[in-house]
Length: 566
Image (cartoon, rainbow, N blue to C red):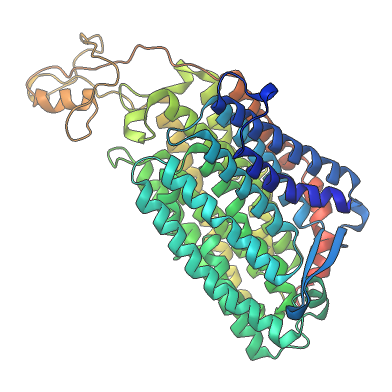
């Protein structure tokens, strides 16, 4: 098990180095690009297989105990050890990371984004996977910081070199926000290590802050909270996220939403709650307030983007929805109760599966239509997926329903447990404050349902074409008014759809020209089935059988909490 966990973390890094070398003669394929893309699929597939073997060997009856543990001296002068291990909290995140990276590699094999050579793309994706897996498995504060930072440079280049429009600004915004947050986080980690006399996370968790004063804990949590809040991201430190998601290639968006956003909330649960409980208790009401503000803010931003005529972008809307969904994760953590923290961890996994699927679907729609602008996809010449690509439309509708928290898919349980935790927060916390937060968050679920259903209606069914008007706009003409067909994809200045332009040109003096789009839209392809079906099945499995995850996380959460939230 020790060697298996080491392989899970090290294999992607070794694969990244191998991706930069010439392919062996028997593995070159049609061309060097195909060879390196195949290499990416192979390495990520091996990592996923190793993660599944690790899961099969994991003792679920002892999920609160660190397993597959390795502890070697690395820098004795600084008391920094090469300490690895997994428990019920980190194991699901390890499997999620391995799965999403493999699906991204598989998707990219058939649909490589425009940009420089595939060699660099695959190498960066593997470095990103290694850093993320290390973040979820290291048990030393300094190693945690190094792994936490390891993912920044690969993601920066994936956005800056293979991204879409405005990618340079989005990449700079991403790197500046996260680096500044990491600097503050490092100060908090050093403060804990110096006052506690060790950087070992398991030893610190066992002490529950006994060797740190209340003021030290408050300062440490403040510094750590800022760093983790940027990566989560928590309102108002979220502004880098929509630009990064909009500009990133499909694989980059999937990994950013499905994996990287989980690093911040994982740090709060793994480090802040057990190591500085008094500091966590002090900031819990503020964290809850920021969390529910993010829920409402993200939902309102999505509602605005979903409205017709605003030029909203589907990827940007999904990014803002992540701000709202991660607000539920933060609310669950803020309750300091096993119920709330378990809900936060469950919502983490559910968000990774569902939002990863949504970004895959957004990339697939863009490949077919050439745009993710909702007005273009919903207009007269838009996607209309139910009629033109029914399987693609069905999967998109399923992902949206799962994301809005309907019972059945996985999105329901995390939000419900977070709300239940807020209903009865830990002793010492103000119950009226958390009841207010629960009510506001519950209202946010209604807003979430509203904007997601609007998106499904507009993308899958299209906007209703305007009724032809009689001269002067007195009364509608019969629906059999003659239509004229324009070239598909035609546009007019100002971003109007052809139908809207015709309506404007008519000026109320004649029938509105409706411009239907008649080209076939390709439905799901085999490699898309391969990428989407596992996420759909796991979303249903976690939703219909939540004990699969809760049985793993609950004992570990009980051992991490210092007792104030029992």
